[in-house]
Image (tube, rainbow over all chains, first blue to last red; front, side, top):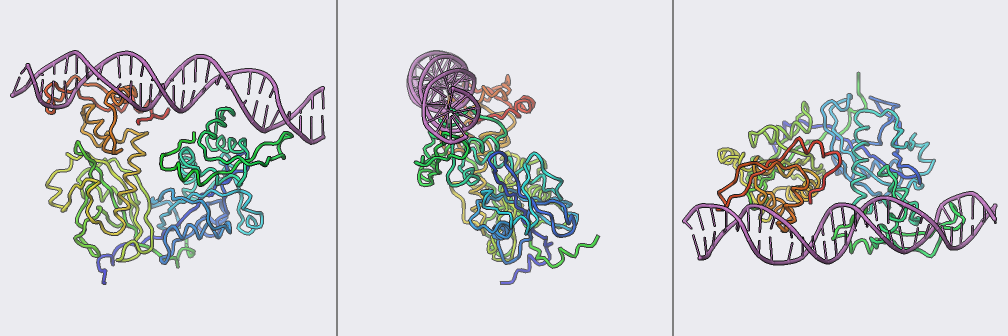
Length: 229
Length: 229
DNA sequence: GCAAAAGTGTTTTGTCTACACCCATGA
DNA sequence: TCATGGGTGTAGACAAAACACTTTTGC
């Protein structure tokens, strides 16, 4: 089939940029790299790359994420398209931003030196190229919305976690603090946490029970629409 | 400044597609056109167009919307990027979908004949080209989320409206029905409606008071975060 | 006078908030 | 025995849900 109708249309460079969030137990952090090409070479930036014509935009995002983290099966979600004409002084490039949540421990220091990457707390971000600061800002807002109705936050925690770790996570995301009793009650009442027999004994003498996210229970409850906080 | 680093990257066709919603008093409807170029010529489709290299993606969406409706200042919001490799059999085209809300009466029949366009209720959509049905599905979900925390829904109503029209709108969006007393109380308690002296007397003998959305009051309350339904 | 839509209150239920003490343990 | 974080219950405020009758008016 001939497609003369598309022939004389402008083609644009299409990039993906990934906002990768991690949680260290206290703060939400974003993973940034030193940009390795002009313009803006050496400046802090989100990990990104161009979309090839032989892959979907989503595949490109996965590829970029995998390259940086070595991980497959990353929790990832499309954020938005950033399409201002002048956003990249190097040329007309539109960028599809994705945000991803990973366990900070999955990301080891070999990878950090290899990619010249670093975790930055959200309240102490360095100067960033182009519109990447806006991307992170939007991603942070989206993260807040997301975890209020979805269990995505668990992706930021280790498999087994204590209630206090979970609370610290939500407090970091919302930049606020919650009453421990109310928080515990709310989370347990959702019926999506499996209490384990094990205790975590590093951070306290008494030891705190570990929990796991119960995916099966969640799947059943999902359609009704849970409200986390 | 030279930018050798971007030189050998693939460039893609970038399109925008607009999901335009209207409300006729009973149903939410989407405005569709007969596609006027191959592939898929003559099939129902969202109004769309290609992004030129000299305009932002958002400007392209506005341009497309304006071309179809003649309106400027349309309520419009980016939905998502649809980037599958094979989504358009005519070539590698990624599309940024926007959704827009307009007053159905602003869209007159001259425009409909000119663009070969028609309103379709969401539960009776015709076959659509490419992934446009997915776009509409996603837009519908986004509309529901949006009107639950934002007064965007008012853009679908005439300037002056009755409480029953407002309720009918929310019922159409959520595909459910609400108790009239609870609905009225809730809406009035938000303090963003201005009750007018006028009555609407077409649809009932008694006549129902007309209301207006009070933008000023809303702006003040906005930051606290309203919850509509 | 009757049909048709407008308008209006109360009770019950559940959810959110605020708040403080005892427990278990290792050092 | 003491310092540290773990774990738990209750009362009051508020919001949501359920529920039905009277009013106005044009015909």
